[in-house]
Image 1: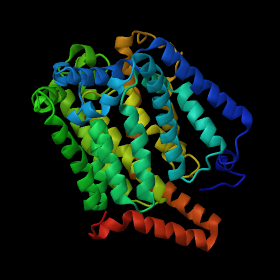
Image 2 (image 1 turned 180 degrees about the vertical axis):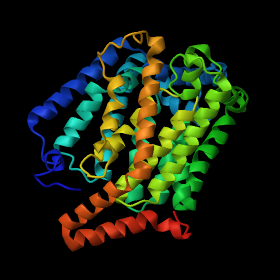
Image 3 (image 1 turned 45 degrees about the vertical axis):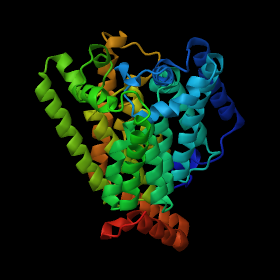
Image 4 (image 1 turned 30 degrees about the horizontal axis):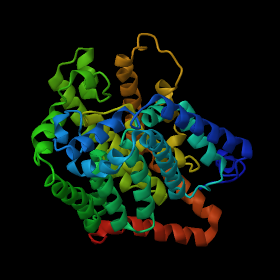
Length: 417
């Protein structure tokens, strides 16, 4: 990355002062304590999964609750929480969610080789916690999206070091807990890493089949949850969904064309992601931006699709800010996040049931910005790669070449893990 004094990168990667770390600790501590005081069972969304585990322990079917949208493997993963005293769970769950968010940010920084004691390390997480409303919402809800927020940067960190099979296993475990990262299978398909791709598919499949055998309704996910996910037929949830297929009908567009438009946008995003995968630039940027394009494309199509899903991709993109060719250097990246500023009252959109319009705007603008960058941003990425090589000398250039070869090694048809 460029760290010269003439560039903002140099300031960002220098060590942060104690005041920044104190401010970050205060914000995260306040958010955690507030969540402990105002929620039960670790948050409304976590309570759904824990209640499903309690139902199973009592002999019932977790899928009697139509809002339980997880694989059978998630039921077993929630059993330890169900066995805890509620007073312990009320404290442990919010603390775990915050720690997982911090760990995901750390993995994103390591992926981009940003020093963990840098100003960006402190300011980036502080900005997400204090200036991006979905961060606090995710902590208060205790939603299991947090598993994906941690798993994706951890996977890419492993992949950047040539450990594709380990990265595939991480995604597989995350999908077993919540299917949010299933689109990441396309990254392993792009790279032709068949062992890693097999792990992405087999880990959740095997764990779910085994877990289903212990449920009173083994086919509940297929017969109840899957049709619900396909149709998105829930009047309450639809009020909070950010995907075009949910928002456009509320503005008067028929459901059929809205769904077709969402599918077309998602398909275009996948094509842009593939273009970025085959494009130039540092390996960490290509991995992060390709993955972000894939996930944003999925969010445009998936039902449901909520604003806190954006936390899966934002840390990856934000941590790449020191690179001159990063998408986080584009003004539209930041403008897309404006509707998510906490404490800002938007006329006619104050009601919680109208928040989806703001969320849809953020999702759409961010998806278009990343897609455009994937297709047209090659020049900036190539310049960043050249600047980094020039700054580091021949040794750094050779190291970057080896890293790129390891990441792209599957293109020539070579399999591997």
